[in-house]
Amino acid sequence: FSAIGDAGRGDRFQHEVAAAMEAFREAFEFSFVVMLGDNVYDGGTPEDYRLKFELPYRRFLEDEVEFYAVIGNHDDPNQPWYPPFHMGGERYYTFEPDAPLLAEVLRTRVRFFMLDSENLDRTQIAWLDSELGKSDATWNIPIFHRPIYTSGRYASPARFLRAALEPVFVKHGVRVALSGHEHFYERTHPQQGITYFVSGAAGSLRVDDIRPTAITAQGFDTDYSFMLFEIAGDELFYQAITRTGHSVDSGSITADTDQRR
Image (cartoon, rainbow, N blue to C red):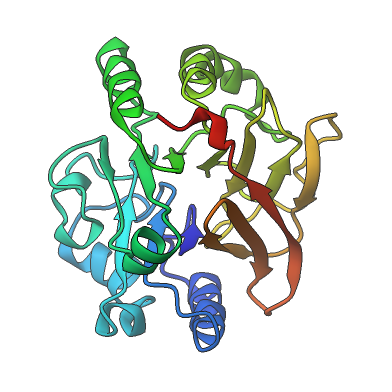
């Protein structure tokens, strides 16, 4: 699958990232995309969705590539009812992709937990705790807009979200989490066993915005980018790629199979 964050500008940079995604899909045929918020900037009209989503990703939509979104701070409140985002009218939800090869051959299942970091309350946290507790997937991957670990300008607000979410992630053996909001790419060193990816540069960029911190395993803030992931059994492979097709980070993470329920 692919991951894009803070993409929905409708400008040439978003189109160039989309073109790079198309080129990579020729060799790596991902079947769905997770959207990390700020999917359609500052608008909720049909024309906004056409210019900032349907037109840039036309080829993917024609090929029936599915998009699964979370809400960002610049997204329209009615976005959960936009059918191509598969939110079903809900601001937070969970889904498991249809992946027969993983399930039948590799005995692996993947479940995504799509969170609303704009309205994180006790009800949503209780829901997340319950849903993670019921999941028997090998990989349980939370997706949300605002990061809880970052070396960017939002490091201070991240602490408040971290206090609410991190204990639930750790309790249930989460290994990987994805967010956007910061307009760059960053991969953290594992924090309590969890690797956090920030990928918020699929249509927005803040050059030289990564501050020096001890949490950064790899960062990139000089061009627009997106991510690709592949799961093969207990291994998750990741790659961050620029709009010009250059790989700026790649590697793999192993599932903690002792945490399976």
